[in-house]
Image (cartoon, rainbow, N blue to C red; front, side, top):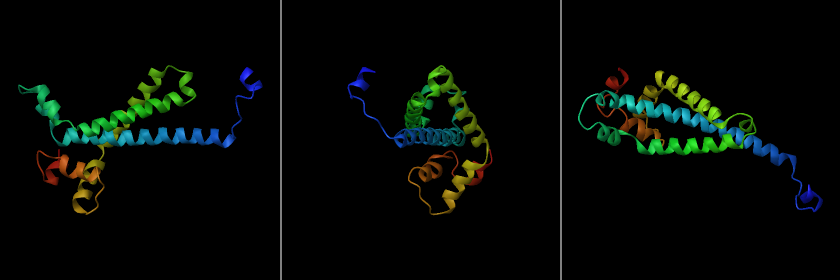
Length: 161
């Protein structure tokens, strides 16, 4: 109160608060949506490159895991999780409940929707579309065409698991 009386605090327009709230909400929603699609792409990479069955047998288990993961995708997912963490902390509702509960619930929600999307035919449709057309999206087309389904490069064998 003393800062108000000494005129150290200035008033701001209402639209600034509204713009900040809309920006945070849209940023949170966009981050969640992108995380769902990227985790879905990670699940597709694991499934299409047949990484999991190779982990049940063999001598160099950790070496196979470390050499087969898409680190650029993992790095993007971690950065987006940090952005999600920041956005949740900026919301008013995060002060009323424990942060760990909110963040864990949101991560489980994202993984659930990514799993449902992975079970659908979206990834195979995207891969087939990128192979058949000349559309080039910088990261996605390279990821779906050249990095997924490396164990067998025919699309028919990739679609039929």
